[in-house]
Amino acid sequence: MSGERVNWYRISNELHLKYQGKIEIMPKVPVLKLKDFAIWYTPGVAGPCKEIYDKGGDLSFKYTLRWNYAAVVSDGTRVLGLGNIGPEAGLPVMEGKALLFKYLGGVDAIPLVINARDPDKFIEVVKILEPSFGAINLEDIGSPKCFYILEKLNEILNIPVWHDDQQGTALVTLAGLLNALKIVGKSLDQVKIAFIGAGAANMSSIKYITLAGADPRKMVVVDSKGILHPNRPDVGELKVRNPWKYRLAMTTNAEGVTGGIPEALKGADVVIAASRPGPGIIKKEWIRLMNDNPIVFAEANPVPEIWPWEAKEAGARIVATGRSDFPNQINNSLGFPAVFRGVLTIRARKMTDSMFLAAAYAIAGYAEKKGIHEEYIVPTMDDPEMFIEEAIAVAEKAMEEGVARRKLSRSELEAEIRELIYRPKKYMDIALKNNLIRILPPYSEK
Image (cartoon, rainbow, N blue to C red):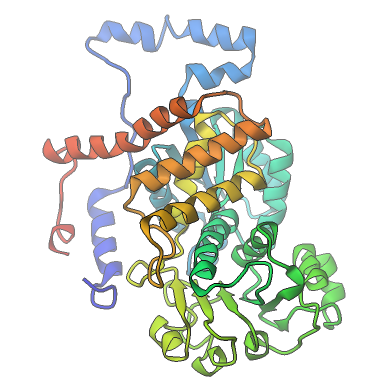
């Protein structure tokens, strides 16, 4: 059914109350009799404890769930489309993220919402938790502190750290852009790109689109106060308050364009909007100011900055949004499950920019093999083979970059990753057939 006709909020509220949580912990070892706990708990468990103590903490990746265990950590200060609603109200989102991690990537993830608004306190809490996890997913943290938190944790942790609102959005946006440009016959290093919004998503997209070959001098960035440029009156304040945005003001917009969204779109080949929900943030008449065959990414949720049909009526050749009920969904879920699957499989110590680019190229390449066209520039979430290819690409790049604790051949990687990605789907089939998971109304009625 169309997303316009289904009251997803009502359905979700009813089902959350009935299921009382989206994930649970289940055993993965056999327990056939009580005496088995002598192996899995005392006295037998002292054996692996001693091994880890005697030979070093990295052995915990072999003896425990840590090798496949990720924390989804948030302070609830910028929850998707809802803003600063706090940790408790943000917990359903983090739990949903953990479900996606497991079902799409075979990753055991646990939601951890923490009451730490101060960024240094937040960093301290995550550092304290490090010995339990193989990777950290930062989620729904306000800007600009999210940039500081990510950078600092990457410095001090010896496990991968990722912020999905930054890298997740960026790598899927890049993948979609690469294929969109192939369709319209334009080159990444030549196009002019207007970015509407200068928060976590677009600032990271700018970084990785630049690393992929775009020219930052041909980029124009618009925040809530207008176009960024070196002579904007508040640029000195930005240098102190938001040095990440200040760097954009210094490195983009070589032509010195001033004004707002319409001025940014004039003569642009691409617009990438990740600002606030619309519609009407971008107007049809502004799309008409763009170059021939314009590409429009309107990624705000739940309502894009401009409706896709309006963008098309104004001449857009390709339109992408963040919604599943329109073509070309730019969805973080195409990225994080496979990226984490890759880094956890080879027990990575870090995530690197090259690994993120490898993920983006894998997503784009998979869609291209399937046959890209104006309404298919990225794959959809229901294709496990895409996640397998992406995870392999990330793992291979990690080994190449020297940040992997394990070294595996491609065939070994594929066998492990394939098993882990398909495993949750097999469990789901068993659980549904045996009524361990019941299909309750209104789910059964939708």
